[in-house]
Length: 290
Length: 334
Image 1 (cartoon, rainbow over the protein chains, first blue to last red):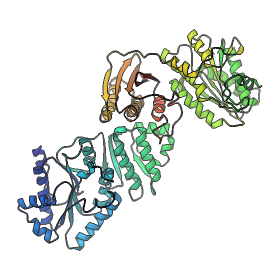
Image 2 (image 1 turned 120 degrees about the horizontal axis):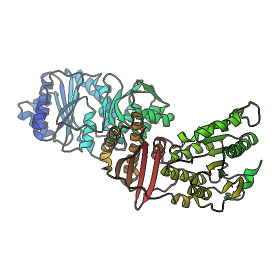
Image 3 (image 1 turned 90 degrees about the vertical axis):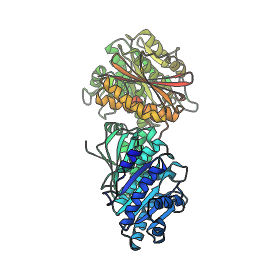
């Protein structure tokens, strides 16, 4: 376990093609193993580093950084390091709202650059996604939309910290699957994996969708109906099966989408068969690829 | 010709509605091809030419051509159907699974029934040589016609070959309020409550030997689907039928978790030329017509899953047993 997590930690000296990664840890040592190099690299590069804690006490974040030989107090005093909590910031409203979050990231980036930092990197503990807080069910939608709406246009690096002790394995698997880059402990493949489509508005669906994956499908539908821009695409080439509920949810999302169409790329036979039984579900959907 | 309205006044009139406003559901026991053509042809002429109504003819394939000949033979001649009011359907295909026939009938009737019009249907889901289980479900369909069209301005003529087994003809007399037998139309004194008739078809299902068994709850649904797909593939089910198989099982197992107490058991086995999947859960069947009307695909209620199973499978058997609901889905290996 420790070996996996340590070997998976790269030194993020330059942001990759996508700065959005999931990080899974199962104890404090693994947590610190991811935290310290990430913050050190950011400070060395002159980027502002923000840490949004959830279950971890902010003082423990500062302590872990100090133990590793960094000077977090000075960095914080100079505004190069911000350690706060989700509850005090983006979760202080009535409910977690992905639409608002997209704006917040753009604002945070503008602010960091305006204050003279060379960039922005952030860590967010998102273990609150497993708790019963308003809007927590939209975390998956948020993770999926971040890629295209925030990370592709902005030179931002952000790691989503998942504490595997505090999140059910099935939920963790789906959320981690929504990241194109994963670090830390291994996570099982979910029955239905949703991931962003690089360079386009849309998602890739892989696996098998049924009653058991209805929450993931609801998130996919939210991405379809809520993503800004023109057309939205779902790459279904790796989807083996889906039930009528899933198709109906996606079709309804396509209908609600204000602009553009929903394009389904290389849909599997079950989807074509269902459209044969229910042609009305294909009204706002375009099929592409065989 | 007013035979229809005269006869329907004898039974099951919804209160407050005049003669001719209810379902007309006669059985025709025919002894020869000629008797068949004469009687069915007369029924259709009355509907299409006499009343100007639409008709749906769903009979075994080999019966279609002679009947069509009566109506499409000579343009402008006797029995012609210039307005194209008759829809012809091969029952051996459309009614391969008897559980999907009623949905077809209802869609047709819903489209054409109104205060001026009485759509006519010829439905022949039973033929000599049909399998035991299919025959039982076809008779169940026949009994459910009485429930589905109760009080509706619809005529459904059901031809029965007198060469059919006597027990089938006996059931036909219980199912149809009016029977034409030996060329004479009479009220059937054996007519019985449709629910009682259906109950007599709820015979115990044969126990399989050595089935593949998967107990599932919500977290095992994906495993159940994956196993069903792999198993069907190893049995040689063609990719197209495998899609149907998987869709049907996906809906059935999902329904178990959603409506049937949160869990169920999937059993799969092979008999002769068919694959059978049985899904057992703690659900109840409250509506005998469930899955026999085309549903709104957006609503999880109203029998959407069962309707899909009926459309995709070659036979669906449903039994309510002590505290549990059992669905058997049959898929023929082509």
